[in-house]
Length: 101
Image (cartoon, rainbow, N blue to C red; front, side, top):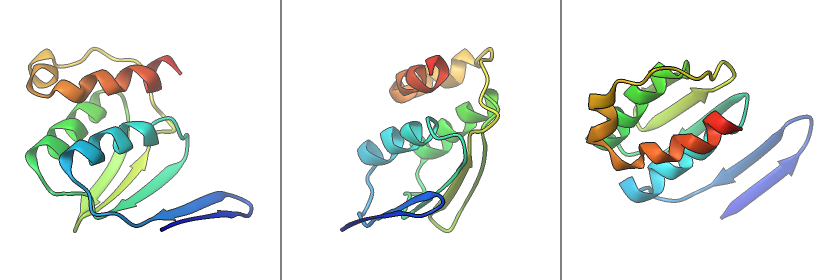
């Protein structure tokens, strides 16, 4: 089910059960939005945690607990990455679009 409401702010509800392959691209896509985004049912797995650790390097703030992820990318900036972390996860390429945007 997708629910999109147009009121002072855009809000939408998408009910899905996430997998690693779905969650990381969605998290990366949320970086294109310059306000807070709340995602639910985000899997609490190693790949998600590693991706979030990479986001710290580009000044993204987040809170992740109980399968709920709140992301604030309003301060997103270029930065020098920890290459060891980047090498651990292939989806780091998804950061190109938000950084170039």
